[in-house]
Image (cartoon, rainbow, N blue to C red; front, side, top):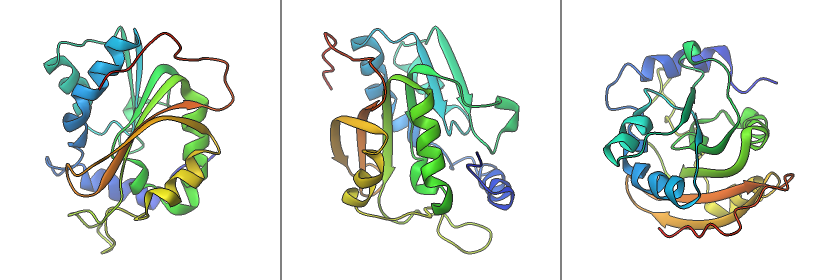
Length: 188
């Protein structure tokens, strides 16, 4: 199942040469650290990991996952997406080519064992692609996103933020799993 076109993968590789591209996960690392501690998370999959800033942000919060795997099509050396207790998808979904969004959401649901932490920026990005398009290919209200997300996930918690423009972060769990987070209260 394709989740990205080859031409767009190449454009993402070009954008990642910019040291200021893909740094949003640093803003969310404290929340991810809290989730990992509260839910006794040992395995973490960073979907759309970019330069793996989340791992560095977690270390700054004294969290070292027992197992960390990165996936990003702009970095083929990372390999394929891997299942984990916690899957983080930070500042990624708005960058997905619209025709591949369902495939990406299916892939996220397949690899999310217990919990997903997703962020979505809802407005335009400050950066543009080589072809002149805004780097945020999907700019839509949260109601539009929720209609797509609930096909694959139960939304456990959701908050709006304005860290780098209008956005939302959420804690989800896959719909087709018996895994729960009962007994693990997440206090953010």
